[in-house]
Length: 203
Length: 203
Length: 203
Image 1 (tube, rainbow over the protein chains, first blue to last red):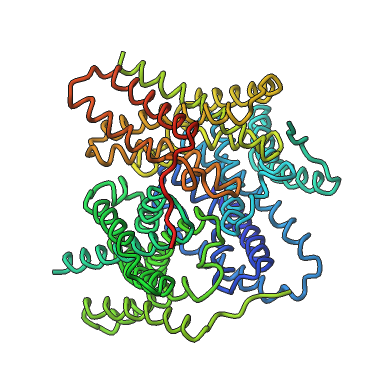
Image 2 (image 1 turned 90 degrees about the vertical axis):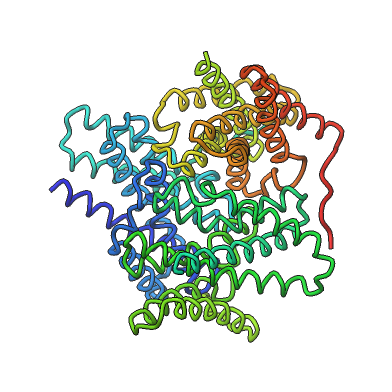
């Protein structure tokens, strides 16, 4: 049951980020293989950095061909269905936010599995959630979204801390996971919808 | 015999990419040490990412000082002989294409050594072939060549798949390797010569 | 005694780079969490790349929560005290140079610990010293400082070689370390002060 849920969360996160990567690459007018590679990198980037930091190698996607096939099919399907999607930017944004919540949860749990302290688990969750997008934006030659606006990483950090708070208060595990994912997704959507942002530094 | 051939392919690939990295860095007018570092990164970048993903550490170039010396001498020689080279861009392009073919072959074989499935071997070959150039372009602050034009990664993927097709049909191993390297090199040269490219996405 | 010194050097380097990262991020007007992340990346980037290349995982900062807290407090303190600092760029530069010297020393010693040859130890020291800044600049979307001006990596390489020369001539270890750190720091400051630079390539 536990393992099934983890697997489901990881699968959904992979799909969400594959879609967001495909959209971002199409906006930059890359050729089809470029689009596939960016979809790939967005989807597996966070988990790959996480596994390399932990030394859990060969990294996850190399051990399971299913994730690669999933990304391939998702990306191709996204390319074909794009003409039916009117609100391009909104769609990219929603899937990116969903992936963020799902992968943060995956990272926190992997940290627990490796016996890391709660603070490190939250850091690992943030890396898993954010680094796919960071690598995507770096390759596409823009300052990563995460450093520029909205409380992107902040949502992961608060969400990760929330998970440990919920577990501390004996909330059932699957419920806690769902709350955390929904919280990160909602926080980001609300922040963007109402144009909230952390104040910037000037000098 | 087998090992000697692998070693030869790796040596030639290292030289080819050291030359291509040196040319790319000189175009950006870096200082001599900047040029050496870019030559280094272009040459070992793909293999380093491959080894970190596999967990085969310390990574290859750390275990064998010969590769480092080879890159150093190649890069310095390239700097000194550059005045004799008229067609700068063409030379950069030809060596980059040659390195692409050679390193893709090296990566596919390392995947086989680690018992990965054919699909993963092709992915590993593509990473080994392409990532030196990706890191080079990212450090030089341009959108990596691979994502912009020509069928760069595509050539690696088709070439990698060709290798497994040739092995399946019992083609002798060294002949198969030669065919794959020549195929990737030729495919890229032909594509660029006749200005072929995959169609881009618009919306 | 030995271990205490190593620990002190690493702690001082972490503080120096956390300050330099915070200043660089504030210059780019990132939001507070963006600033913290850049401070983090600048401070742990070099050591993280070093540990991943060596396969010494989980990487250093994951095993010791103290470094993370140190970076957090340093970064926050820097943000609050910034109004008292007049010469912003000079401060950033001095701390960056200090961190460079300290971390190069840490990297060289880790190479010795892993039984690498002197040349590889110097390379590892250079990576530990430089890569935090390289990742910082790449994320902030500028060509890394290291490739553009001053003899940044050069200082690390000469400093690392100097360490082995001093050890060869039986200079006491802690004195050798201090000389190397002071040498790298001074070399960079002098070069920038007198606007010295390696000649660039043109063609």
